[in-house]
Every structure is written in structure tokens, then in C-alpha cells.
Image 1 (tube, rainbow, N blue to C red):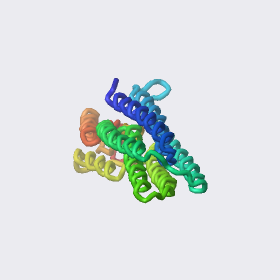
Image 2: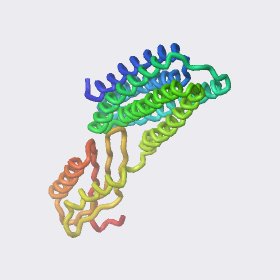
Image 3: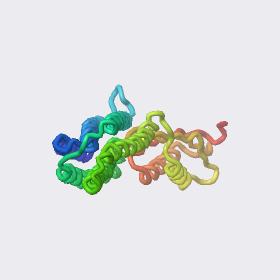
Image 4: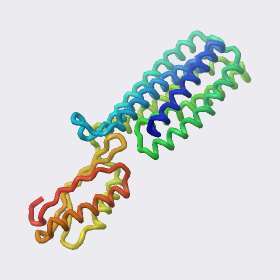
Length: 288
């Protein structure tokens, strides 16, 4: 089992535990904000399961049907997770709006407060593990999962603060208001996640800083009279694909051309993780 898969399994385990605790606390307190957190965690569990299978599939080697590998499964996973979060936020707003009208009271503040604090602390730990592994492996799916749990940290502590506020002031209207604020925060996070996950599906080029790194790597191995053009880049999951046309003087031998291409490829791979480089060599006098 790869490190990415093990980390995704940790997220599934923690979300399952927190869902059970939040549902129990929601039933006992009758708090819509606590129940909204249970729904949020349930969606996080679905997202964690999706992330688990997507990183497992994305690690599979290229095959006949997928010659470029399976990296985009992670991007598809991120888009699905963003959609699930958005749906959960809509449901929370709907339920909170009904409670604004009915004005149902919240009971047993202590149980809800303790569970929300436990949830926040657990998710701080798990989200840090996920984020660290996502950074090390450049995993979009784990990054998305880490974002979910980071959101849970803020919302859990927010709901805990709201319950404390209700206990102090006796104003139960804070419960649905806080639930709606939580939902709006979730919508914002889901939109940010959607943009990050969806962009590679359209074969958008790598970031500006990465393109600059690639160009610097190429120029570091070019001599006078050499040039390149038609640089193209894209990303699939954690894999970066780079191809370019390298222009060399006609008198350069095949062996020397091969040596230059190898040096450029090695330089790019040293500076960018999971890079696949394809270089087409042309005599310098050919028109671009």
C-alpha cells in the first residue's frame, strides 16, 4: 500500500468516528448547527472514500487504454468532492432557514460543545497529515481531502463557539445563523477546490513559475546558435507533461543532439517532480 493510500485510509477512519459522535450530539442537543456538521462530515467521508480509490487508481502504471497514465482520476475526484460539498452546504442552508422560522430550542449544550471541540482537534491532526503527504506526492485528491478537513476545523470550532454563545445569552436564534454562516464558508471553499481540480482536465498549462523553471532548465544547456520553440505543458494528477521543439545547427551530430536532449530532460526532472519530457529536434534552418 502506497503512502498516499495509507493517508487516505486515515481520513476515512477519522471521518467515520466523527460522524457517529456528531449525529449522537445532534440528536441529544437538537442543534441544527451540530447536525449540519454531521452532514458535513458525512460528505467528507464520501469524499475521503473517493480520494482513497482515486489515488489508488492514479498510481496505476500506463496501459493500452491509458497510455498517459491514470493521473486525471485525481482531478475527477476533486471535482466530485467539490460538488458534494456544495450540495451539503445547500442542504444546511435549507434546514437552518426552516429553524429560523420555527425557533426550536437547543438543549444539552455541553455535549455538543465537547463533541465539536473533539472534532476540531482531530481534524487539525488529520488535515496536517493529509496536507503533508499531498505536498510530498503532489496529490490533488489528498489536497482536496485536506481542504475538507481544514474546513471542518473552522466550522467545528465555529459551532462550538455558537453553542457557548447560546448558553451565555439564552438566544437560540444563534444556532441557525451560525449554521448558515458555516454553509456559506463551505460554498466558498468548494468553489476554490473546483477551480483547482477542474483546470487540469482542460489541459491548462503549468503555473507561470513552473514554466519559467522549465525555460531556465532548457537555456542552461543551450549554446550559441541553438534555440527552442513550441513549448507545451500540461498536468495530469501529480504528473507533469512537457514537450518542445529543439533547434540545433545542422552540423550537430545525432549523438550530440541526443546528449543535449538528455541533459535538458534531466535538468527539468531535477527541478520538477513527476515530469515527463518529450523533445523533438529540428535543424535550425527549418521555419517555425
